[in-house]
Image: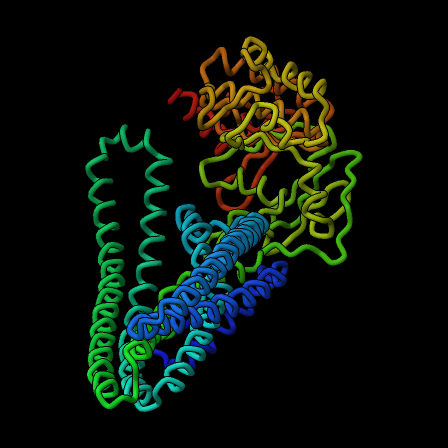
Length: 590
């Protein structure tokens, strides 16, 4: 759903109603608190109305030199002020609590939705842009289900009570004041569309800015190695400048609105005061009553300003809502079969049959009618040039993508017929860049198996040779890693990743050649650990170096044109010219 910049007030509110309906389920658990806040608003408005009347009455008693009655009136006024402030405190306390719970629910849902999306859909969004939607954009969503509805109720209550008091005091002065109301409508009607356009542009460009900053911060080493600091600073300054201009335009519209609104309020007050003085001279009004009238009229500027500001505020927030809804309405490309079966792997045989796949419809195929069988317990090395499909094949087995044609079966079961959770539970992957969070070593290891016992964790660390560096640490497994924790080497992180695979204990193992960036000693340690891990498991090695395939039972050489050949390393080297040439070239380079 996309909103146009220049819309009528009625069209805007229709769109707001649909947005509110979309996010309503997230606020429903707190509907009791919202009803209580509405009651509090009624009490607060009644108390404030009474306060203003008592203030005017006190002035009248003072001018009449009736000090006894004045003391009683002031005492009642103090009590009403106390009641009003108590209810206001309770109202804002509940409002903040409900707002934070609501934001939390939406953030949790959006994050879980992004994590549930298939990889190709999720990768359409830059990380920085997603962070902007998760934080800044979601924070503005309280506008639709809390801020605007409750503010509107508060403003309408004030308008109803205060306008009633104005007509009760002097209907002629009240009519004069209300005749100027159309000017306030014209002000918001002129500025709201312009605020909407500026806000929409700002949110988009701010998302781009955050995406750029995230990208830069995640590649500091690369920036330094290319001496690209100046270039990155220039690009950042340009991106910031665009976002800044649209943010400044938003603020300029707000300042213009506030200035013109204040001027209209002053003009209204002057006209009413002039006519009120005539009422005092004619005996129609007392000084105290006129003061009450002017105070009621002055405080009416708050709801009038608020009601007029709502369309401008909404125009500023619809862009944020639209960005959040765009992600939440995204559907995964990977559709689970309903009902889906649980995958129970007993052997671990993988059969690839007539597989054809390309990332985009018009791209050259990564695979074309590829057929291959990986026997249970066999170790197969996937080799080929960069872009030939080694990691892609692993992603297809994990169902990060679905092929355009063909099937993948595990123990005779089509992976499309089983749940994603059960499929991925039966496959362990050791990536080149392991997945870790900011937390303790224990917390990171238990990501692979939350039910693992302390003894199982220690055994996994010993099998992966990670215990060598964990045991000497003061806090052992409770040592924090990542931000605000100790720094581990690449090899140590890889050993922890292998420990995770031991804990997961899946019958199928995929190794994204974890040792490719290590020195000889660290590589040998990992090779020994991986040798243990591969025992009695079906293993696919994504080999980026031909030297790493020595321990494989068989090699599948991806040709780069969608086809593949397989066999033992020696046979392929002797009888396949392309494979021999690739091995010789890399050996020469090494």
